[in-house]
Image 1 (spheres, each protein chain N blue to C red):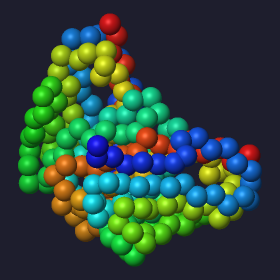
Image 2: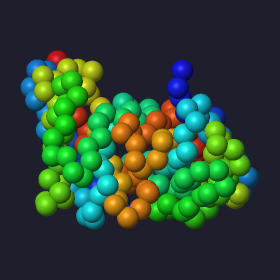
Image 3: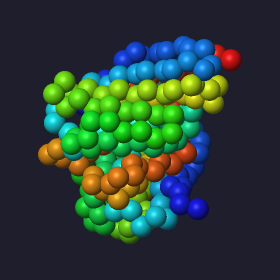
Image 4: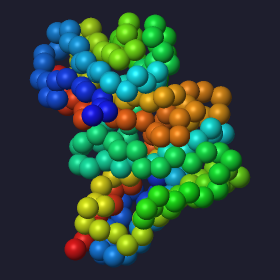
Length: 114
Length: 111
């Protein structure tokens, strides 16, 4: 089944403890992206990647890191999480901006930083 | 920054009625997409319309695009309880690669 898999689904952590949220897609998509969703703010893009070893900042990149060493994986790293990073996170993938099919989203990771 | 803004923020309709929501955006686009999200779950792509297209249909969905007004509308005909969800428009600018979302419209379909 074509899908984007995020792990974990739920995570509660403490301020300052490094964490990684994994994202993997099995559709050979070139484009991958991370978003955070907060009430009343919709989805805001954190980072995106057009291909392996190519990453760019989105609208809210502060406090996050990403890497794209392989086409299928795009992990989101929080080096020193803070409570304002408590949010619902989504990973998405697609064939790029010329796609006719839109993007495929993962099921989300609900992160709480205390 | 958010590119698209949906209107209204919330919509409540009776089953069988049509639901219309609008999206306005700020800069020139390559394409505009509509997504549905059920209560905290992942987003599901509904339809994509390119900047050189004016109208597109998919099942009970109809999307229009007016690039002169920088606006789009999504019409859901003969709504069902299962259409209860949040609907988001998202745009890809003509000079960039980012897919940017609006804050969404929450649709409630009453049985």
